[in-house]
Image (cartoon, rainbow, N blue to C red):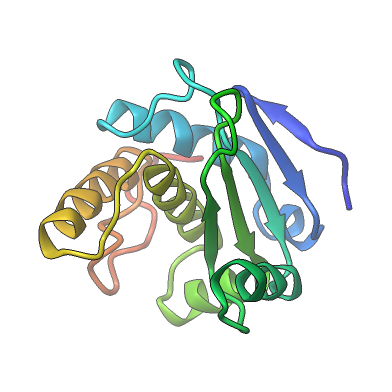
Length: 168
């Protein structure tokens, strides 16, 4: 495991070095996603405690998912609510699942990572997608945020290529 990287108040822990190898500038991409979601109406972690982000393996995510959600399988992203007002919560991503999903959807790993960081940040801010109205609101913020980062609409198939000359 690599030491934590601190950016914009967020502890970024890269447990699996494949994240850095596959997404050059991993920490910068995460920081940009968090700043962008605040600009689109999502949580502003400059005004409140920022989350910790763990870029892990599917094995770790599977263990956490089994322990805290009674689901004995990996998933792309898990969020954990803050245990105190001084902490911003946790976002955990599983490398193999995220990479597999990105490839299946023909998205760059950077785009999918950015989307899942935004998705997790919105969950920590109280957004959810269990009801149609909530889902539309959350997806709207995600779409605006990803577009502002130069990616297409995350909810439209085949629309994940990085747009124009915007680089992350």
